[in-house]
Image 1 (spheres, protein in one colour):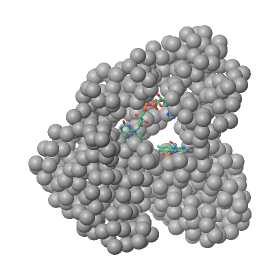
Image 2: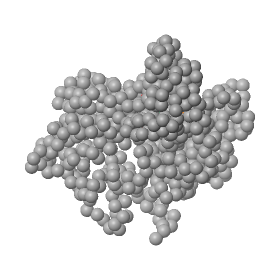
Image 3: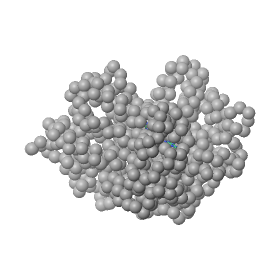
Image 4: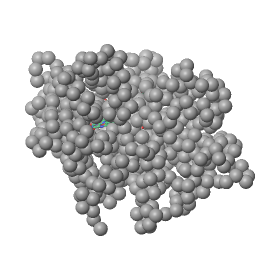
Length: 605
Ligand SMILES: Cc1cc2nc3c(=O)[nH]c(=O)nc-3n(C[C@H](O)[C@H](O)[C@H](O)COP(=O)(O)OP(=O)(O)OC[C@H]3O[C@@H](n4cnc5c(N)ncnc54)[C@H](O)[C@@H]3O)c2cc1C
Ligand SMILES: Cc1cc2nc3c(=O)[nH]c(=O)nc-3n(C[C@H](O)[C@H](O)[C@H](O)COP(=O)(O)O)c2cc1C
């Protein structure tokens, strides 16, 4: 029986209330449990649940395996969950949690810990791990002589501080007296290749400590249904098992002579069973431009039909380069391999100069290096020099309440060089230039619990989203309108020129008229002599903005650039200090308290 909108809203309200009281793991389990209920039409006695909920210390002298993760875009959570699943299948007791869900001090009572942690910002911990990292690096951290641990570090070798957070935590735990059971693994964006062997190694190494002893009760997993496997039945498709989504439409949002090319992209999720919430992102596994692949093959003299073997796969070189190779970003491991293959002194010197390397590599793609530093190679050597491609994430720009089988994105074309010989980013180039409506694209949903609308629809919201940062706010405004939320909303948008770059201008104007959007403040940086950005508009509106904060508003910041987020943060600090009669330190505390209350959330890339 179909639900009427009022019923849907009531159920959604009840679920939101429940969500407030659950941890991420509990939520995942609950979603699987609901799916189980729906499947059999009646409550099920799910012993996976009973097993997970059983207190750790009561039954077993074998130790609980504690798995904590620090994530921002979900990868570390996935790695941690898959490890937890494997451990539970063996009947081990597992305590799986995000670093933002645990009291850092609990580490002192932990016997066996696996930490899965990403690095973000410029070598910084993910926001969810900030408090834990601060505590563990401080004098308050306890001695950890009874702790056995392993660290799985996720990162991206295109950043100079590769896997910095994992490195720092690994060193610090050892410094506090803990025993490193396994060498740290530093993983690049293609972490899947290292994850599976690592997981097996962890299980093998930890078995003597964690395996239930003879006579001890084993946790039972009914029907092989572990907690996260159950939730997977809700979103069957994920990063490892993407859904082939049909591209429906690509419509330009910028007009000539804009310096930017930004488009609204719509994909069909029909038949996928994928669910999402405003604030989530969509992951796309992109495909390289076949002409680029052809040129690279030609330049190296390799044979595109030759089979290559990598990570247990055998594929023709041409196919492998198209679907699996990172060809647009120039990363250290590739340049190291290329320096070796070409014996280039210049490349070796560049690798030794961190800042020069960063500036040089970001202005180039792989084909530029191959052209500048030629080498003749066979198929296997060429494939061996390249990093595997990683999916690209895009903030979802539509609400599931308006159309749950279609999903929208706001995508900017990434490129270097002028019109002639322009080199495009792989994913944005595919979406905006190469793909055609009807094409099937491998996608998945990446949930983002740290970027959520307030449960209470009466709460005011302030959305700060320059450029493509406006994407999730299109979803927010649509969603609150569909829910009949009455809270006020204020959007700060910025771009270069009003005439050419005002993304979704007509929609915002319509929302202003209908009352779905209460206020709109725009900053077009190049429409006047002095540059004006969103942070300037925030300052100009300081008094009103402060009143909104005092009224309980939630603040969201989204977009490209750590610089933008830092400038916006400073503007907020100044506003709270000036209009709230506070010192800068007190203003920082005010915003920190808002952050702790999930009232100040960022999604910056
Ligand atoms: C959570 C999240 C949400 C996002 N939301 C959006 C969104 O809503 N809209 C949007 O447009 N984008 C969004 N992005 C950015 C998006 O994921 C892509 O990064 C962006 O589209 C560029 O991808 P690409 O494949 O087109 O370009 P890429 O192929 O990744 O980049 C190509 C260009 O990068 C440069 N480059 C060379 N070497 C390097 C290197 N080592 N590292 C980095 N760059 C290098 C070169 O100039 C090259 O031409 C988001 C990112 C995240 C993490
Ligand atoms: C905005 C941003 C900044 C990043 N900064 C770094 C960095 O400084 N060092 C690094 O090794 N990786 C960096 N990464 C890469 C992430 O660590 C990598 O994508 C990882 O798989 C993310 O894991 P998570 O999904 O668990 O957050 C950054 C990623 C983003 C989106």
